[in-house]
Image (cartoon, rainbow, N blue to C red; front, side, top):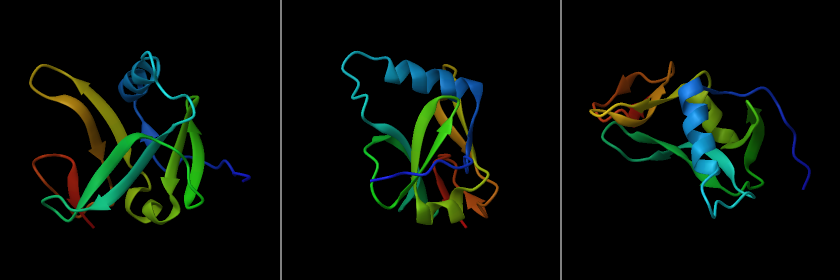
Amino acid sequence: METATYTAPVSLTAGAISEIRRLMDEEGFDKSQKLRIGVKGGGCSGMTYVLGFDQATGEDENFIIDGIECVMNKSHQLYLYGMEVDWQGGLNSRGFTFSNPNASKTCGCGTSFAV
């Protein structure tokens, strides 16, 4: 299966890149997996962000952000194009955050949105 690389539809902040690399450097990490960025139905606003490591499929577009191999289902670009993923490492709020210009409504949890 030949894959094409193209301009990244989303961006990762320096903090997100650092945390993702830390996770990838963990002992036992499956180096064949790529960072999956996407959406799924559900959540309090209708759609929920997906961020995790997964195998690429024939439905994916492949792209690289600062040396990190990423995949996204082709149909998800409509919802995520231009989004920025950040990492918050504070005591009160810890985790990945999503700043999505396509979201018409977001939820207080920060991981659910509507278009």
